[in-house]
Image (tube, rainbow, N blue to C red):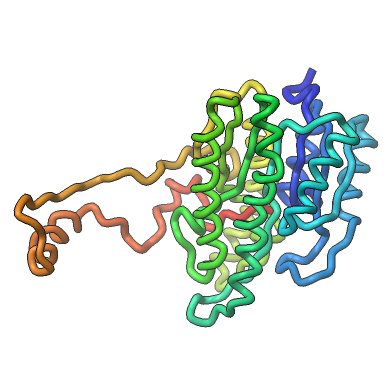
Length: 311
């Protein structure tokens, strides 16, 4: 009996990278899997192909599991409703969604076009809305449902050249938190993961020097897609039903729990603030606790400084 025996799981972006490993591991744990992947390029520029999703589904079936493929886009709400109906028709229901589907359009913000912004927001932010909206009523009605959304340190910590991606990923963290709060009474739980893994997304980050190339070589060996995938699968099992509303990270064999924004300093002036007193009193008092613009040291990110991107 696997940890997901009797459960049906939808995995988006399941044809490559972390999504592929999520689908394979979920199936190995007994789940019946709907493998969704548009089959497009990393930047979402291709028309797409049913090939990647079907290849993963075939691999699951060859190993004795149950899986079907779907090549629709998560940016289309009606298409996501279709994925839910496909799960019901093929397997009799749906119990969890793992949603690493994503694209990149990396560029410095002052050079970013509206199209580059919209494309990334559509897949990551709108896509996360779509998979949640198409499933939330089912999950609430059956008092059983789990989401694993994908955030990123590009949003949580910041990353130059990824304003579109980082903004979407921070939005996903907020979406996941509120779904968890609203769903608690109906046993609907939601968490999100900021992964670091050697995928085609990570490979797309430019190598600027020999040191970066050396770090990339280490990543290929030690920071694999199956590691965050295994954690993602674990969090949608019934055994993790008490875990909800959290932001996790996974980098190699490091599993990380991220803090979430909470007030750290409050300054009060009973007679009211003026522009001058804000500048002379409030700001200096808070300034020692300001968050620096630099990313945290490597150790606090699980030993790797590369952007944390889903596969």
